[in-house]
Amino acid sequence: MTFKNKYSNRAKISERKIREIIKLFAIDLNASQITQLTNLNRNTVNRYLTAIRKEIFESCQKESPFNGEVEVDESFFGARRVKGKRGRGASGKTIVFGIIKRQGKVYTEIVPDCSKATLQKVIRGKVSLDSVIHSDCWRGYNGLVDLGYKKHFRVSHGTNEFANSKSHINGIESFWGFAKTRLSRFRGMHKSTFHLHLKECEFRFNNRDEDLYKLLLSLLRKNPLF
Image (cartoon, rainbow, N blue to C red; front, top):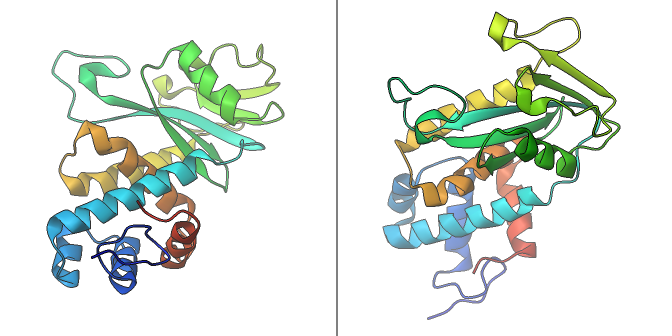
């Protein structure tokens, strides 16, 4: 039996049940908890949670370019470093590049490496030229002024300097802490779904002062599941 409703084009469960899943997802319950509270099959719950995360991913990808005071940084997600392996992205970790507008939203993107070409490509696509960019001293950020960004300030983490009179990247560091703490609850996840969980962290962080339940209902009415 297929149900016609506002949130799914080919639902096998009622609109009321879908709203219940969305509500429990909004308050950040996991699949096991949602399965127990809704009395639905675990596979059904997982299917809907994955579909919700895919819509969140698409929504986050459409964010407008950043301007004003902007911080950029990379972080590494995954297992602990293998002994003896050093450097950015060592031991097969997933590399995530982040951009945050101070007092505003964050944008994340999984990148293959921390090279100058890779990081500059993301920055050019997401940060307007009139922005003030703050970063650490990683060489991947060399040459931003040559690209047309007139103001680029750096903080040297290598000398244990995490802020100075001109610059800091505390905003993006705050997001990394939030994301890693939240993702640690999953006790590991498949690489094929990591991008969905990352964007969920981004969505929750960017809308931390909003009613996520109402926000998700609005998003899914415009973009029904399945």
